[in-house]
Image (cartoon, rainbow over all chains, first blue to last red; front, side):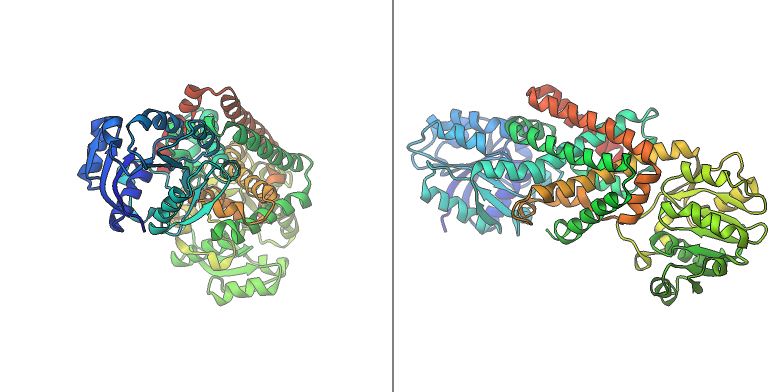
Length: 289
Length: 289
């Protein structure tokens, strides 16, 4: 098991912070540097004992790093890599935790890295909370972590990142980046855009504000929970997985439409079948994930 | 506070069973008769101590009842009332707990009841579980209960039903039935049809079955929880609140569409605004309901 002497985490929020805590617990990183945009946020990460030191200076923070983990919104990852490249030491490994992989992987491949390596990653873990205060070391335990190597990915760097995620308790799955984006577009991105739209729609039809929400039960709270997710993160995911998400939303709209048509036609049996099917899948498959 | 000597509950499931338990706890019903379609289910309600006696015979069960509570899927309520009318004693009160009110209220008004009274009701309470085993006396505590009197509703019967729901811990809200159906169509029915469609859609695009669900996190479980609801109940709600639900789904589709268009146009600021708005509403309003 490789122990990284100096690990630099860019973006010490829920994911970056939890990985720091988990790696520290397992003795996987000797020294952890956090990089933040402003001193205020990243100082908190040090105060909480999540990182050993911090800086807001990228070139300073990645210097001598054996491992750089980028845990910022997906829209910033490629430009961060581009900026840090001249300052990385030979043999350094860069990885990320972004929820979109194809565009990042392709654009990093275009850099034709030679002295450093990149391994794209995405731990399937999270809560609707964000920020380093929400971080906890067991976040990745029993969860899947997708790694999306390309033809250019160095096998030894891939193995080290695989071992890192395995050590913090995750099951590592190797996937093509396009398959990853299609899969996550369906099971994660689509539900988020459905939930954002539902919340905004209900708010807008409510003439008296807060009034219709008085009549919601626990069901609405459950279905909208993910609508409290981070706006920058999700704006970036929408933009970077655009093609897949647009296609998936369109296909979902067809399904919702066919449901609506059954209601219009008063197709009692068709409605029963669809609801029963949904109930069985939710109970027997999704409910057991 | 009126104590009903003989209360008959048709459909002793989650709602009917919980009301029986709550009313018994508060001493509101002296004797509780349960009516079921088959002996097996309704016998269980007696075994669990939820009801005192049971029958599968409607005319037998409503005989001498001071109060009849109909807690069956909404599609059956009006015809049950029609069938029981000749057998009810003078002064009996009929109420229901159905999630749709306008069609029921209007059709019962068409009966021009004279010796008995009807008060339409809908406790805003429930879980995704159904059946008498899921019943518990505190289900209604702190929850809203909508009553939807029409011009024909007897004020004294209305007061008695209002007192009953207040006594089991609910806040009673009087609403016009059409307003009820529009409000619940938005905050409850729409989310259910969104969730049913999402589950079915994801299942259908999954070529390998269960495979894409391997990559879902807690978010998908939350958003789909209500998709495990009862098929007969929701088929009936769809049919009985058809006009409102179809209209509301269409308006929701426009909102989802406008989201999709922002993604297509790569409108970064527009996307950020929409997600931020959803987050604020979820956190500050829905999350606090």
